[in-house]
Image 1 (cartoon, rainbow, N blue to C red):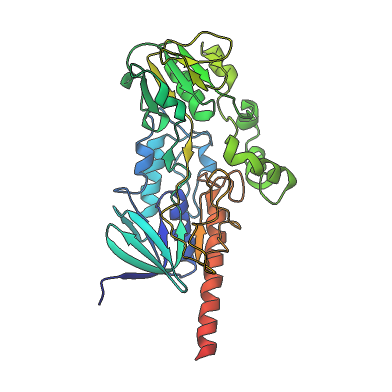
Image 2: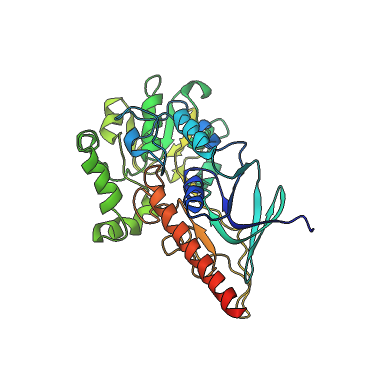
Length: 372
């Protein structure tokens, strides 16, 4: 034996996307193994800021086959989500503590270089999530060393920051939530253009109609969904549960996008004085990284990696990469709909990908039978 571990399908990542795929494959009686880099499923949720809650009520946060254990209308905490994912993973073939360094497609299979040795599989599902690498703009390198800087992924609570005023860069949901929390104790500025805000009464009172709208209407099957999807990865999702009005009422001062610093290394904005702040929190999102998927040369051309859009996100047909047979993704932003990255929406994409894998596996078996 050469020590290589073999499987029909390997799923990379045991977050909500990877676990949903694992369950969907198991329900089809298919062999699959889920590799997770962290020590346990859900660990990435525990590392997020202390006061974080989901903006989606608990009744819309269930993965297929297991209801989220919280009262209807409750907004789950990050630790409740982590506990739920750990419980969901208990019945699935998850191997934790395994880092995948590279995926090498071949004619009939994939080879994976991992911290636990070499794996091979006929199908690979990338379910590493939409929060891979924290993005910090280049202007950060021009700020004074006296200004404390951190990305929102490293933010836990106000107590970890030095005393003094704070500039939060990025006016998406995370940026507004962090600004609101910090504004209870200090002066806060919020820089950036906010995305569209879904009014709170819609979320609070529309109930099932609201979830039906974002889950069933805002998909790539509808004209409105396709319109939103075109700019989704560039502009981010809508503001939900918090708004700029909430921030302003809390005393947060609004600013345009940060694009420059002054000679003293302070954040600078057009037509206004530079800011004297002790901390800058970069709530500027994440960028994808799929350079570890090594697409082989084709037609005499060197391998160029998987096809990606202008922002670096994989170009797929509802999660399937036609250029690399057997390679799939689950959990991409707006993979099929607005809820594709959410607990309550990812199961739909997982089921579709599992069905495509089953179809491909069935075609292979039929071809093998015919050849014999």
